Image 1: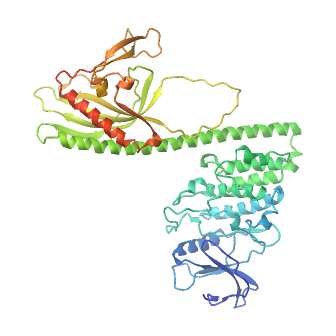
Image 2: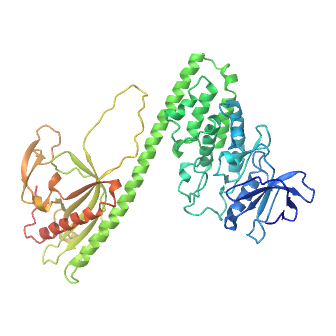
Image 3: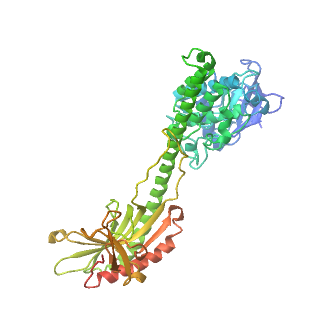
Length: 535
């Protein structure tokens, strides 16, 4: 290994200063005499990480702030070279925040923690203003100039340069430290990070300092185990807890700019002095604080509920896309067999309608339609040309009901976690005619199970209208014969498959068997002269 870098930086006889994710760090001295004393030289270990080395140089240089590490020198960043890539920076004589002796200075120390948090936030504000998102804010990257609290934010190797087309993070590679990373960066390849990602990490760093090294697990700061730390008589600590809760939280309710963080930190720092000037008693302040906590708790619950519902929609969309692909492929197989190349016409296409169904039923059922695919079969005819459609639909089942909640005004409940959604695959029939014949509207129904055909089921009807009665007065129950295709949904007589979203695609073999039986009933039905739908 070379002992002189850039023709001027000589490794001194002292021990190495450590090793990071990208390189070894050594103490060096300037042979030219331009800079006195020892400095730290980071040497790139893996040339495949040169893009990150370039990032580190550009990120720190652009930020240009007293609380961001200042590079004294560096090797060229235009392109990798055969020579060692390196950068030179001041030595952090006070170590980093991850060291136990340094961390102990901030455990339960609000004043000292505020000093550190404000400096880190100031450095981040300068970086964000220059289009630099750090993405690696963690204790090991907060370096202290000496025994006091003055610090530098270091290691911009993982930073996002917003206007840089040559972004180094590979798809699938995690950016940022797992313990402090913002949830929107998890999984790697999240290139469009915002300032909110650094705010999330800084919130975790603040909690880490105050608690002597405790790291809040992913967005669990609201739980009693972690929140109880802020339940003290110290108003400043209480306010700091509220701030951390607005930083370490889902993106939708997270504070979105470091300016807001700095303003809040200033307010907390001067709280004791300002509290003496507020026109209310200590009891009044306590009530105001309680109101603020309740408000934040309500906002948190709503945000977590919204996040859970968003995840549910994403899962449903993924299952729907896969379901449609499966159904389309299976119906295409049938179309190939049916199409004789002469008189029979076939086609496979998505089902366009999306309105909820509230069919006549043996219960109060409805279906929120998600998507579907249909096989259309048009036999040759001398008169009216009928088109028969075999439909495979995906829907969410439900019941028609109204619920009321009670409780004191302003009360909150626990957020509802992501639910494993109930889904149903329905096999349906539809008959239409060519527009030129101007015949009656389309006829629709549910395909019955082969074993149920010819049996009897009960159906709720309105005697006056002959339609589904629900819970309205005057409903009655009639017995109906199960035909191959029924206008009504008859529960266990109707061909369908109930499954959870989590069971997809494992339930496909069962669906294959049901589709085969339903298609058999469909083709039997359309080749029967009467083709009469049941009730």
